Image (cartoon, helix red, strand yellow):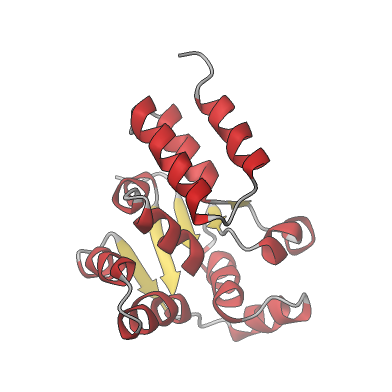
Length: 171
């Protein structure tokens, strides 16, 4: 069913849930999350009455997202040595432990260190662009999703505009 495995961190799950693309993104990859990301998104999210927490939990419960324990604790220590902590550290460790194809994260600190930690990192915007290029979403859904990402305010307008231009090429 899947040809690639991906580990997602909390912000990616939350962003994709907010723009109603979590399910389609889970169909692109075999999605895994570490226990701490589960706690951050679902346990903490439900305590804070976040709607996205219920959606993420639905995909964990139906098997679209697999929660895995990081057994190689030395990988978390390695992440910590590069000032990568919490859910991002566990996501990195799980990515390495499971030999996943992608680590999907919107965390700036983690992303800027991708070369020195040896991680193939993409973010939410790359996932949305892939959904568009693979024909999983049409241009209207793509554009609306990108505008919702702009409203979330996590990404610069320049980056959003660049991805929009790329997504609308060859239409």
